[in-house]
Length: 69
Image 1 (cartoon, rainbow, N blue to C red):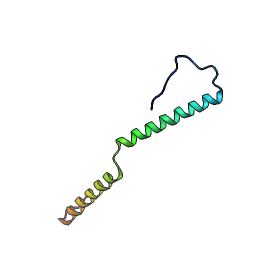
Image 2 (cartoon, one colour):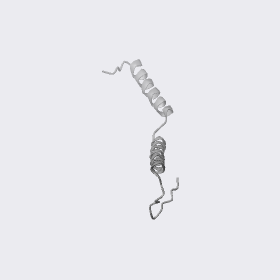
Image 3 (cartoon, one colour):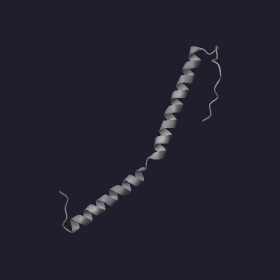
Image 4 (cartoon, rainbow, N blue to C red):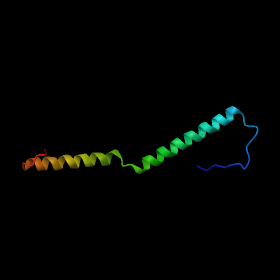
């Protein structure tokens, strides 16, 4: 998202307008953080695959008599 900044404060901004701008900036920060966090994590399919692999390994070890403690 692109933001333009002013070199001086706008004098005619009302309290309501400042509140709206502050809220919009907070929401923008929240969404950007959320999108960034979702981009770095693995999806549920990866977790399902890992759990399935672990279960099949445990079943194979149990079949040959090696049970976990």
